[in-house]
Amino acid sequence: MTHMSGLEERPTYLFGAGAAASWILQGFRRDGIRVDGFLDDAAVRIGAVGSVPVFLPDDDRALGQDLRGTSTVVMAVMSPRFDEAGARERLESLGWADVRGFGEYGRAMLAESGRRCAMLSADELDSHVSELQQVRSLLGDHQSRQVFDGFLNFVRDLDDTGFPPITEHPYYPDDLPRWPEPLRMIDLGAFDGETVAAAIDRGYNLEAAVSFEPDPTNFAQLATTSRDIPGMSALPLGVLDRTCVLKFASQGDAGSFVSESGDIAIQCVALDDAIPHFAPNMIKLDIEGSEEAALHGGEELLRKYRPCLAVSLYHLSTDVWRIPLYLREILGECDFRLRRHSRTIADTVLYVYPLD
Image (cartoon, rainbow, N blue to C red):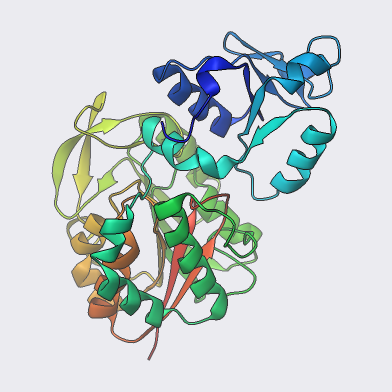
């Protein structure tokens, strides 16, 4: 893991005791860095994460001033509502002398925990300037260009200071056009059905939804959700550019992904093979690095029905230019928008609205 200067020699604590903190803990352990505890206002309820204790940030008995003055705290919260600057100010007022931002570790955390995340060196960015300029020119509003510039700054320099505010309501943001109605959705990477359920919560008239989810644990939850939503069907399949069987890292959460070292085998399909007669007007893709392949596998469907799309753009380093340029080629004129729905670049989504 990068940017860990001095952590081997001093007590280290993670602020937050959720999923992001657990991933950072895994990466630190792989690199031989001891985490002495988590700091969280819910410490009394949580108690411990595995064998690592959770403390209140102002616990004077367990974490005295001398310890705080010689320890490092790494911010480890990804919630879009988290005020990192305010939390850092609070910790420093409590005597924590060395507080480091999430951006210093976010990219390495995502990569080393097995999560898929775009990472580009300055040289790689320089070698694709033309493609990146083309993509930026396609973006239809100032905020999209701000997100794009901030995205590139982060994947190159881990600089997370240039982003506009986080946009709430992933896939249904208030500041972008609504999807066509009645909504006919394909949901790739459906997890537990939360995206389809959110459409109803956001007031959409849902006519039909076909949801794909290959992780067995997730699919069990998805099937339960689909039984409660009229017009929704659930398929225990992965989606790629071809119909095949592949190894899969089944994690039982939203981050499961295709991997040669995966623990199970899953059936994958191309959309053009699986549902050639379903006419979607919106497709959502969040499939941990398989987005481009899935789009290729549905090229006939895309050309025929020209649906709107919401595509995760942060899993592979090439996605940020390859996916927008491919969709421009297949769909013709489109309104492209980019929004970021959580800290760092995680949950950066490309919104695509084909024009008549």
